[in-house]
Image 1: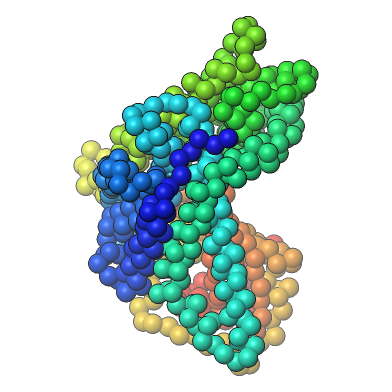
Image 2 (image 1 turned 90 degrees about the vertical axis):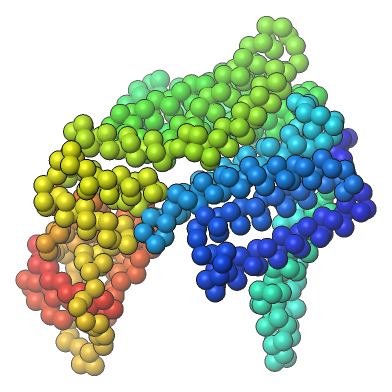
Length: 577
């Protein structure tokens, strides 16, 4: 039986109205981006608009039960203030005009904001339910699952609606009637109609509390219950393998931390799905219960190994924003692990309800997550500031040599903190750099992309428009296979093209150019004097860059070619066939 409150008839209409208003706000943002309007003039303003337009109406639609009650509206005003400050902080840390990327800033902000809003919403719903702040675990559990299933159901409702509209448009296009296809493709139609459908979907979901509770307890519960013993076995076998093979094998993979985090997270999610609200006894056979208990006792070990992996990376390379978020995630998982291990021990000693101590622990950790994520997004502390200071300390202390230091990380991926650190390094007389290193920093600050082909950011003195030759010399694609060496004033590179259509290019950007070393790889092809590449990876980063070159001359010794659009000219010399 569900105890979640349902919206009355008047509130149901308000849910639909709020959904339509939300869609219109998003339409205004899209129009502003397309037309370079007021909303999209600055990154902070656009981040603020999207954050408030998506989060606050969505939470209000799930909160509102009686429009005449003041509490949900007061919550909405409070959310506007708190989320607005976080959005402004995130938006002010990037600047596309300076080529300071926003992706690595906005993505973690959006992800953490989503997590904190989802968890915080359940606390607000329980507050509204009781009329005062409360840590009622049963209600927190029910509201969390009800919110998740309501959003999923409304998303499915919207998806099915649009599939029917696509079918509608397709059928009439068979009759040469394009009106409906044109109408359904207009933004002025897509946004408000989608908002209307989402509002109706949420209304349906919120008034079917018993149905969603049944789905949770009689479908999802059994799925998780059936798979939890397998997950526990995987974790324990992995731990036994580490004990037999040694910890060095784990560190040699270079990705131990992320896999350990996924393992620990999976255990936390599965055990909570099986535990439910703690009022239902989970009838596992004794042997399987011991197996699950053993995996919970091992959970702090998995999180501890993840923390160890992070510390090894930090000791070698210093802090980065990614490592700081990894540390945060591992600390949260470690906190869960310690609490769950304690619950196992306590229920065994007292012979009480299985894992009953999880209730209070889950409530406390959830509240800590909401408060800590909000503080981090407000810059208290600033992960970008910590990371930049750590990286600069790596450089100034000599732990990382100038030629090995990843200046491009500060330039493009550390927000305005990194960009400011580089500009201050140029102006700071105490920062000892020679003239060549200074020139390298200046060139880096002028670049608009982190990864680019040699001289890609140096346009030719005059615009160049090349045309594929009508009479192309009979160069065969096999003639391009092999390793070739090229160089210019900034860098040298070795490109290796394989007969199977794959290629890799290793750049050595010289000690005086502060961009480190990196390797690009991807696919290549050649036809009619046109040599084309599709770059799919840069070091361990997945990318997608397409370049086309005109091959001017090809001999057994060298290859002369020109960038098809930019006009930059290159000559590489064969090393091996």
